[in-house]
Image (cartoon, rainbow, N blue to C red):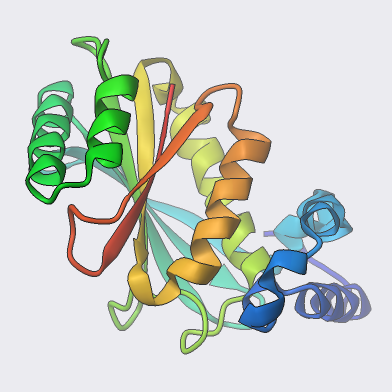
Length: 226
């Protein structure tokens, strides 16, 4: 990754921790300045300075559900984690959507049922879904608090992976959408960040967003579709 002057790096870290969404008091969460967060220098060209190393470990690696891209990311502060983007085959995607509808219906979550039916009603035979999740070296999927990543570092890592996996690999044309898995312990912090990221940078591709918080115990799915 980029060589960077120590003074610039120190200033960059002062900036990101001063405006770190993950460190604000939850009682003040509605007043967070998102425009400032996304428009700051660290969300522009300086942002990749936060990454010491960004390696693609697997490219279209076969899985039971389809295939997977995985990335190992090392931050300037030495923290390392893995980011996975799994792609279900079209058949697996349809099976998953049908099952999720039945399960949500059984749980009486008709708003979730309606969302699946609305946004997947014309699912094409070639279309599939992506599933995004993070893991650190101790196999934890919680990426804030105990693990210690800032909101900006998490955002930049996700942005770089999406750019490579969705766009550079040209998967975007057949993607119906994607899901981001969020632990319920971190739902209040990560869900607003991911939702705003999708609306700001991916709305031309995936304009529809809804939440499924019943299909996996302890997990909330942020789902974005065409």
